[in-house]
Image 1: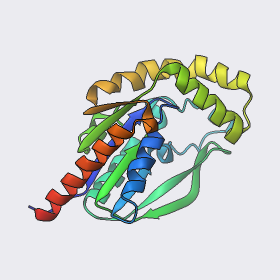
Image 2 (image 1 turned 90 degrees about the horizontal axis):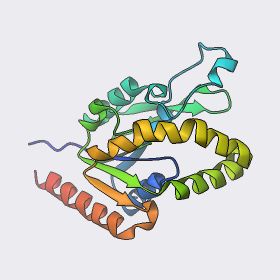
Image 3 (image 1 turned 180 degrees about the vertical axis):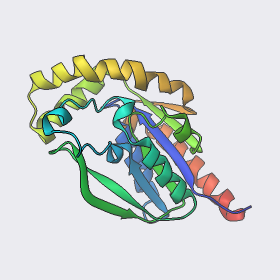
Image 4 (image 1 turned 90 degrees about the vertical axis):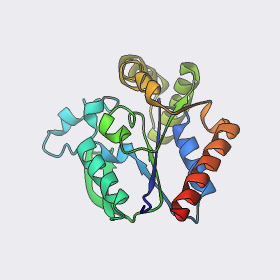
Length: 211
């Protein structure tokens, strides 16, 4: 039996800590054969749309993502073929002309708010995680991030959360929790859960070597 890469899907709401969990696992295996794919890199190309229309894009809706391309790329990586990962330009609200070459690895971490929403993506995963964090913590984290990194005002963050982020989370993200093999409370602060995941991944890697 030939070995194949392990695909780990890590989902959770905005500000849940899923990126911290992903990075913690990635850092543990740094220097080994591991890569990370962010679902945010696969927002649809909107270059055909007028700029004002792009401003209305709902980035928390499943239709904002080019899952067809993402699935194609994951399948290529599973066949140990390299890909050209897209880069999204948030300033112009469309895909950049730049791409990032990604070489195949033995462990693929796929991270994003809706990576468990598409059945086709779930079918490619060996382990499915959902990072579950209370809404009040998530909004505080999102507010701190958007004010610091994106120059947003508290009022604009709250308005976006109430009108887009919260309803989209409840409609599309939260229901995907039922597909998770493991639910991790408290995100990157849950060191026990992260250690358990690292051990599980290590075991699968060792089995692949034996196979």
